[in-house]
Length: 118
Image (cartoon, rainbow, N blue to C red; front, side):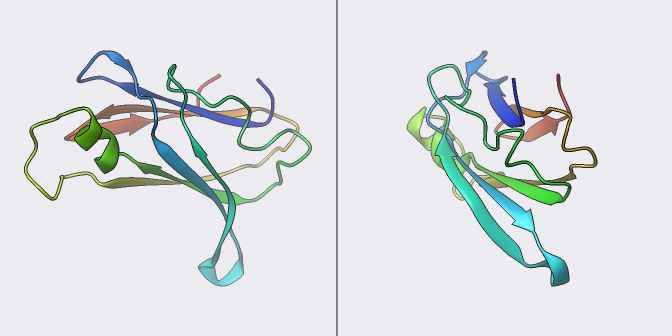
């Protein structure tokens, strides 16, 4: 692992969440956002490469947006529309760009957990 990475585990189905769109933003001054990257998870619920490499990672505030509403629709979850969770935004700060930052998402249609992994 190098730089900034993430993965998603679907706790309802007990498997990785594949084909989930994720956008990464850097938070600028005045709380404006700049899109850094838009990606989709692979069959293992991971990305084929880091969101940001160690060289690209900056000491800054970032936001990941996980588009999970469409994921649950594709997997046939019988959930009232609109879903309780459509998007999950997660803001975090990179204090030391020499370290790796892994941000896993544990997911269900009714809640989620996010943490700094290893």
